[in-house]
Amino acid sequence: MSKVALVTDSTAYIPKDLVDQYSITVAPQILIWGDKTYLDGVDITPEEFYTRLTNTTVMPTTSQVNIASFQQIFKQLIDEDYEVLAVLLSKHFSKTIDSALQAREMFPDAPIEIVDSTTTAMAMGFIVLSVARLAEQGASLAECKALAEKATNHVGVLLTVDTLEFLHRGGRIGGGQRFLGSALSIKPILEVRDGRIEPVERVRTRKKSLLRLIELVKERIGEREPVRLATLHANAHDEAKEIHEEAKTQLKIVESVFSELSPVVGTHAGPGTVGLAFMAGM
Image 1 (tube, rainbow, N blue to C red):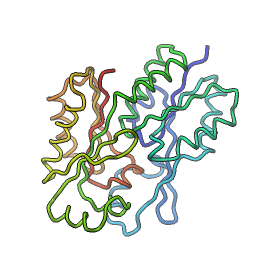
Image 2: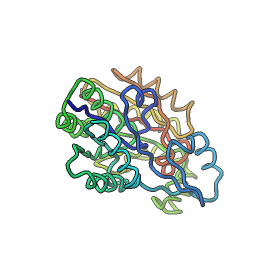
Image 3: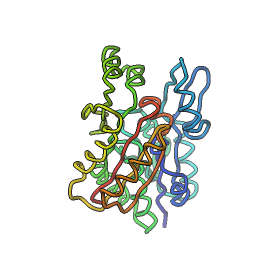
Image 4: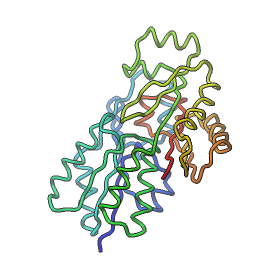
């Protein structure tokens, strides 16, 4: 009987020990910086990336996993007698799913299913891990796909950025808003919602914004259990660790992960970003 293999993309940034434990295949997104191209999480470490990003005058750009990469991944897994489930970041963030769908067309008779996670980072990571654990128990491809689709309604991501500068550089806000935010020390809180990044509120001071993340996650979770929580950061280890420990005292967490944001996500959020990703009720 064929087993189900899980594929995701590098924006999930699932810790390596869990990737290895469940034999998850990670397709790297592409980072373009000047005349050089990097594979996300492969050719450049988050530490190197964020240090360079802070001081650069040339902003990097990003590109989706290409068709050839998915073709290679699918072929290898099919040749090893696996059925394949790819859980990928929201179609609103990237055309990664388009690449996967086009690659699948090259294997018309192969058991390959593709699911839009509607999110990214460890919210997507928790979906992948839940399905990988089910697959490990011998679940069918249809059962794994059904769980992945159900799980998209049980996850979320909230984050606060340290500066509005990178949102401005990426065309997300105007120069006036950037200046106003800097002058008043306003820290925006954002949420990944329905496959998009939406503003939630603006909080004065960094400390208040970080604590507010926990409050908002608690509101989103409500009475749902169990709770899985990941603290994410872009070159903000100490602040993120403090919030991580505080969140664990306020929530009944059955699984916690401390993870960096992948360089591709960090390109848009900027250094100093701290976020909380969760799965609740599954």
